[in-house]
Every structure is written in C-alpha cells, then in structure tokens.
Image 1 (cartoon, rainbow, N blue to C red):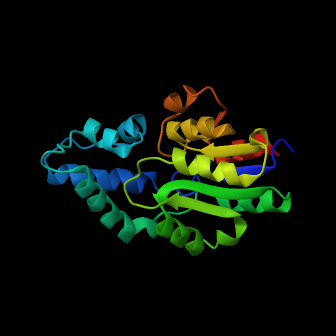
Image 2 (cartoon, rainbow, N blue to C red; image 1 turned 90 degrees about the vertical axis):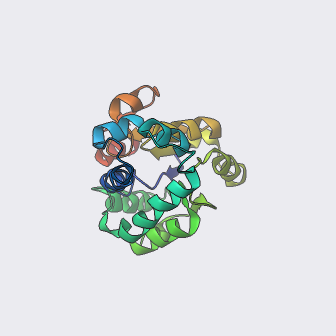
Length: 212
C-alpha cells in the first residue's frame, strides 16, 4: 500500500453539502439585497477563513459582524443538513479501506459536536480512529488542529494521505507534512484545486484508483 493512514475532510469531501451551502448563502444575500451566486461563483470564491469569503460576496461587517453572519448560516444549515447525502461511493470506499486495514480519521473545520452527530447519523463513526473538529462554529480553519493531531499520531507523515476538496485542505496537508489528494466535487472548483500541484480527481472513484 502507498499509505498507512488516511485523513478525510468531511464537508464536501465525504458529505455532499455544497448545493445546500449555496442556497443558504443566497438566502443571506437576498435578505440584504446583495447579488445572488450560483455554484460556479461559490466554488470559485470559497476560502478559509470564511470571513474573507463573505467579504468577497459583499457583506458589510460594520452592519453585519461576521459572528452574526456565521450564526445565521449555521442556524439554517443545522436545520437542513441531513437533506444532504454522502458523496457517491463514500461509504463503500471507507469500508474498502477498512478491509485493507488502512486506519482512517476525519479532520474538519466543522464544529466538533455537530461533526460527531453527522458521522453518527451516517453510521460511520466506528470506521474512524479519530474524529477531529473545531471547538466553535466560525470555520476559521484547521491547521492548528492538524498539527496537534499529527504530533500525537505516531505515523511517519510520508505514510499519511489527506483527502480534501478545498485549497485549504492542501494548506493543512502541507503544514502537517503529509501527502494530499483533492476531489473536485465539493466546495472548490477544479481549476482552483489544480493550482495546488497535487493529484485532483473528479470523484472518489479516482481517489480509489490512486490509493488501491
């Protein structure tokens, strides 16, 4: 095997929630008479920290502080999140990696309790050795958590693959010193992902071919 340990991003990578995020953003924009977006604009602009992304959409932090906007987003997201399915092939690929005795973890910018509720909902929690989210809802990024996680993992970074769907996932992988593969079915567009200089796949089927 090329790797001994897989670290998954959750939102966008394993959980197909991009369309819901676009819809909620448009509800927020509509309330403020700001231009609406489509998936193409969203995947071209979404970045971490999310404060920078909201600035690109035209939100005025003097009128709407970022924390207020984040809470508005999460309130609707929390109500509707389980409208979203897993990405095609996600459950099967996680199970296949288990059968190959590849250890797996989730490292996410999603709040820890909500992340665990999601992995429980899809009955995937037992599949992961570790499930690591943030301690708040503000999605500032996950480099710090990634560094802490690697410090305690006990596996050579060269034997670890981080699988994500955003340029931030590549930034996290670089900070951790691990290898990275990206899928273009989530929150960043393929042209943006290709600037990272790592393998980019259209789906998890491509990830499987890369690893197995």
